[in-house]
Length: 323
Image (cartoon, rainbow, N blue to C red; front, side, top):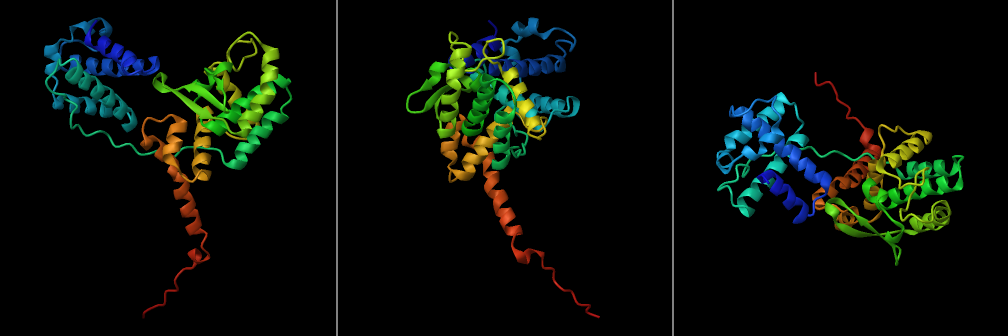
């Protein structure tokens, strides 16, 4: 195994990273290797890089310096036209890789990523449904003509999204036995990390109505939600279902998605939950509270709107001619 493969195995076993995350690390490291080898004239860009990964020796790795990293950053920006967010992700992958090579494998003496200035990322304000819009979406599902199984399946899915902020992958992977006592549910989040989410009365009521229909529809399978073919609903089928109701409710399906329903839940919980960021971080399964901080925009917007609502805000000074 080459050093990249060993690093990826380390991410899976020691760090518990998901297979999707591991692939992203691999693609980011391979892209840098491609640049490095062509930059140093060791390979051409047209060659299949996968077969040359074994040729990245400790000597080559120890010959990577800060100037190479900055040249790569320039390549990402001016040749590939990558955004700051994409550049930051790729550089973060490299930093983790070089940290591993230095601190775990002890193959390199210096981390060339150390003290490298990372691209500044502007925080994106999350798109979300308001309270009234969320209610309209749920009402749209109940008034749509279809069988009781699909109506309550879809209503329960959207209710869980809007009330728990669960990820799409977490919801699609849920089994019946993940519904635990004390009105909680067990989910497997990013990095295969397990956490418990509390279900509020809306979720509990929706599940109580849905589960008898589910048992009649397919009593043998362990999945919580089934497709028309009685298979587990996958991410794509859930997203397609959400898009349908978003459009029927009069909203733009290009603007709203299952992830925007997660934003909606987080925004409403922050707004009406006394702004407890640490609790919200645990509910959403964020590794860092900095990720959760994007939801503080609610308070900032309300402060702005309250200031603008002051009746004195429209008064303009009367300027007299001094001449």
